[in-house]
Image: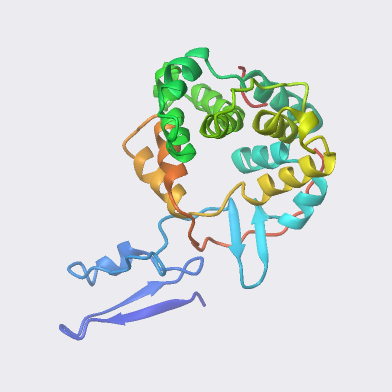
Length: 281
């Protein structure tokens, strides 16, 4: 027998039975009886805005799963770029798909020279790095006009690749500017984490950033922070996207959101295989 709740309106004596699905009840069903009553939940502590099989977090039980894969297995057997592919496309990439995915990311790590010279260098010398980062992210929509074609799946995938590839470059750029250091262009002969470290802290000879253990630790941190359920940032991005804004404006809003915890339906555990195709540059 399916689980359900029986709700009685004591004002009228009317009763309604509402089914429990995936641990929740539908507001549409409740509205049939309580159409003039609002649920006041400013912290979203007991409200589900969507259902998703992307991420499951249970901090008390020490559980973090991406697409059903336990985080400890992904951390042990996969790279951040593989996990990013998994979150976006639903499955870990094959060897061929991963090679193509990495190629596309590398192709798009550079930013337009005018982003750096006419935009980034226009900030005041003591501007906060996060303010520069969110502004630069939104500004990308003025360089990639095809981002407005949000209903074109090919265009959307291209913007996804651009965002994954360019965020380390922009983050390193804003950090360097905030410390008065010159901008360093990406070095795509390096791995994803190594490239970020180099853009952040070069010259390498003066700091111990060549240590592969450090790059591996950073890659693990990227994996652990790759997705955090429907937190404040992702909720803000969904709201902005509902107005059909371009991905760069939505991402800018998401970056500004603070982290918080939201429950999502549990997904089954799976084992990651080693190392899907994504887009052309």
